[in-house]
Structures are given as structure tokens and as C-alpha cells.
Image (cartoon, rainbow, N blue to C red; front, side, top):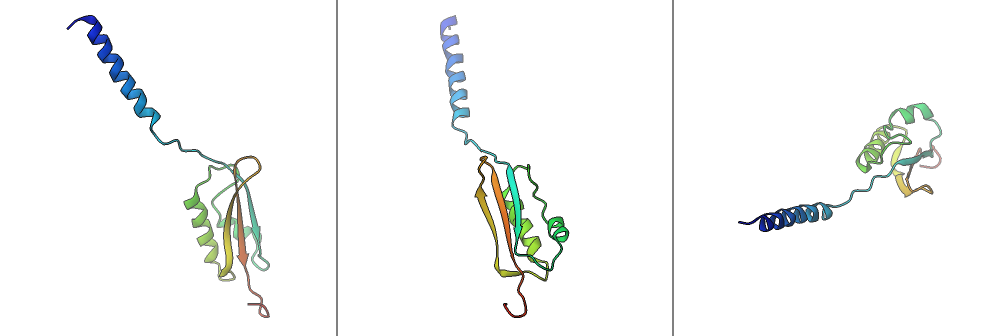
Length: 109
């Protein structure tokens, strides 16, 4: 084996390793720009906020956001029907979370 064939072999291996890193999927992370809570009337805002672990400036995680929503649905005053979690892209390229909570009144269930 001469020196040139050894160098070529190393270059081929380095090229293959480099190509492998190019094919890895790129995961883009987005930060939470805002969190809005709508539709509550009788439940104190602090009680609602205490159940939401997502925070403005955090890296967005859909699983965490849905867990936050599920914790809010455990508050007896809110009904799942009419409540929703809205996830949208923000103006700054991040994520806006909006928790729309349905708190029925006796005359409007």
C-alpha cells in the first residue's frame, strides 16, 4: 500500500461521515412569544396561571402545552365543549398560545 491510496481512503471515509451529518433532520425550535387566556369569569386568573407550566420565552413544546390545557380542564368551572388550545405562529417567528376556556353560565350552558 502506498501513501496516496491511504490518503484517498481517509478522504473517502471523511466524505461519507460528512454526508451522514448532512442527512440528519434539522429540528427547528421556536420560543413561546405569548400566552393568552380567554373566557374565564369566575375562576381567579392566578389559579389558571398556576396550572400552566409553559412560560413566555420558553422553548415551545406541544406536549407540554397540551398537558397545560388538560390541567385547566380539570378545573370544575370549565367545560371541555367550547374550550380549546390555539397554537399559532407569532409575528416574531415564535409561537403564540391561546387558552380559550368555556365557563358556562346558568342561563347559557
